[in-house]
Length: 302
Image 1: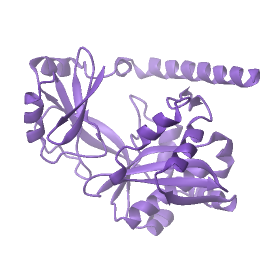
Image 2 (image 1 turned 90 degrees about the horizontal axis):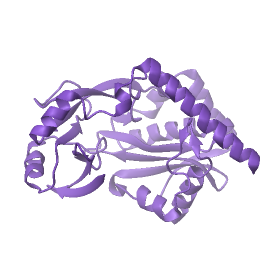
Image 3 (image 1 turned 135 degrees about the vertical axis):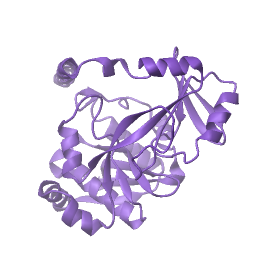
């Protein structure tokens, strides 16, 4: 169950049935330097909210507030200049892959948000119903839905396209905070059939260049690891491209007595977070094999 409310000129997303948890709609992209006025507003808003969660802004990793918290991890790349990243922060393999993209005709550029871009994004999303062993949540969505979903935070975002001729074969939506201190890769996706041209490596390189040109100090590639997983191919890709794991405080502020009790009992976490990693990894492998087999069966039927 999800709803949207506006408090103190902030869009707030409220989720959950039993435990109602609120967060900024732009959580992880926009931040709160003084959360108290918003917390006061949430208590007076008339909507039942049990917990409010927010994450602390980079670069300060020591807790600034006395609210209950847990550590949340992010993949963070400190940005000074493109040349410094290219020569000192990445490993040789991703550097060679980015060069390979250029040699194979992939062109990178920032592009305006319009119907032409959204049509290209829609085609990238609809290449396969499964990505990295899990269902592609954007597969099969109407073009109008993709337009609406990609149209968020346009005043603080830039789109980067990887083109092969006139075809969009990959893209990034880069969204920065109010102070232009950090930018997050809100979306990054490339076509699997063009994997040999390394468009994702080229997109990362252009994202670094775009941040450096705007004097943005940190580029964030979502989480470094997810759940209890410590290493996988995605975290290796991030590390090879210069991203480092940074743990930041994520605060959970009780708004009701039930919210306080739920946090102490760990009810704010997903069910999978309570499963031991030895079991969770097996479940992920089974899920991935099942979805990949399903896609292969459909492909062969066509």
